[in-house]
Length: 117
Image 1 (cartoon, rainbow, N blue to C red):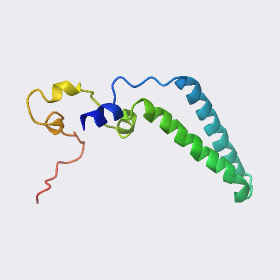
Image 2: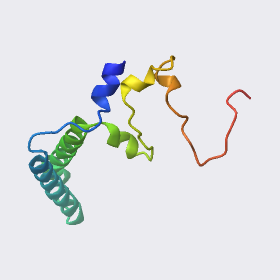
Image 3: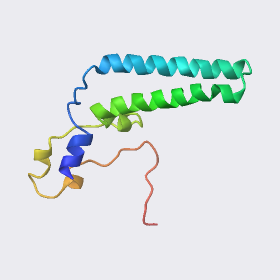
């Protein structure tokens, strides 16, 4: 379990060779394909002619997500409004217990409800 957490939520993020260049290329393709898709809908282009733009938009979006996730999956949690506080794995087991004992509860803005009622 420790190895999985260390690989997925690594700190600092892994360096990806040419990450900036790949990000610019994928983002440019994504925006251009989305622009064609949106313009096609606005000007009444038949749906079958818009399918390549749709697939290019989805594919480039997945490539962008893959590029970000390859560095570290922390952004998935941060995008949902959770703060990720990296902890060195060697400090978790010093006092006994497991990883669940070394993490804090999630703090929510909503009213506290009982799960046992």
